[in-house]
Length: 542
Image (cartoon, rainbow, N blue to C red; front, side, top):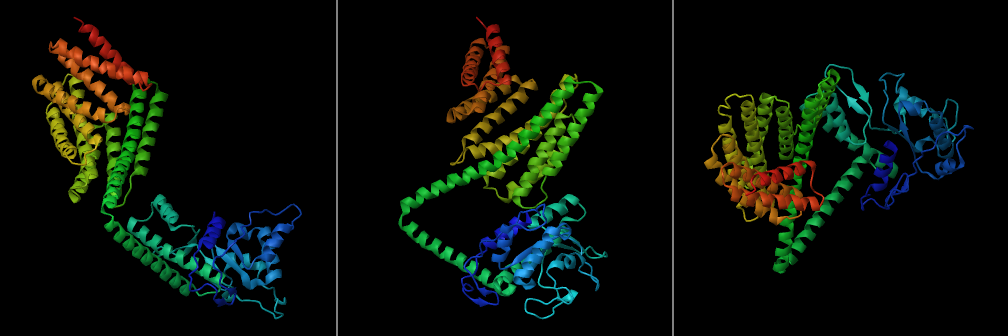
């Protein structure tokens, strides 16, 4: 990995135009540094370097040696160093230190000094220039050091393996969990600066330039490119102003792209929540069907795995995206707890998520993404209290104020979604969520025995759901939801003696599920709903 990263770094570096063709101690500065030969060979059985590698060494201007404990122990690396030294001298060999410890006394530079054994002139040996040259430890040739310098307070300085990207170092520290987030950022920032310095040190050595001069010129050229890009953008903007009609078309397209991007963010969050819900449902269903000791143990282990996954998925950043993703993880954690019967844990996770989303929505009131996320969190709490009420009913206990709490959260959510659905740029998804909100409120009213209030709300939701389904006839889920609403309302109408109205709505639902079956979108759950509709129609037959 290190070899490939160095190869790409050198070949991809844009040499500043001000330096190209400059005369340096190593020759003219080229427009590009390529090709870079990457040796992937292994020492052959005979112990000698193959002809292809010897030719590559002969044609190379520099030899970069990746220094690590493994390369120190490699006779093959030693032969390459010795061969290159005999061809070009040791001054063009650049050690790139990526791992290994180095001492600080005169018997030092152990790993590096051993690594350089093939490039250092031995005592009594004449260099290519004909003079004796035996460098001391403090006169080692240039080397580039990408290792991590660890400087824990009160401890001896140590060196850790280097990383091709400082972000990998950050990931390692995060996984270790031994440092605070603030100190981790300090360590990573320090390593990033040192990593950049060493990269320019290497590039400058290959070009015969000073690292600071190369970095300054490179930064100045990048700044010029940015300024030129801005000038070009301004020129294009001037042309665009003249073409007003065309500008409006492009604006509309950009607006749609923004909306699609926001929808993608929501879909990512929804996918995360849906995946966690699927796992949670599977665990509950398995627990209900498997009662052996081994099965219980396996389910507990699976539960721990899900919890660990959620822990690992929760970001710690304070930017808007990180806070939103953290609220998604908290919602998943809450749903998992609810399905396990831990209503207290579910309430805690849902409330934490709600607090984050209220904060995001308050910071940007005109951002529909945060408003929609807030509505979803309120829905989750409504679902929780509705489930608690249903659970108490099944145990023949008084549901208490749970239905009231469910309605409170559902109505606040519905109010937000109604505002979104009334926007000029309203999306079909918001209208579908509006229908879902009506049905949740209607169902709670029905479960609480308030039939007169429930039915108008449900019928209103059915009308909204029909319009949403019409806007996207190919979306099977919205079609199936509409069929489910028809089933629920038809059963309620039948229970209240309104048979003719019930049959009309149930047949509408039957037709929807029949179309899904024809398109091969009828899942096993939807098939059961279709059977319920057919049974209800038989019961209501005149």
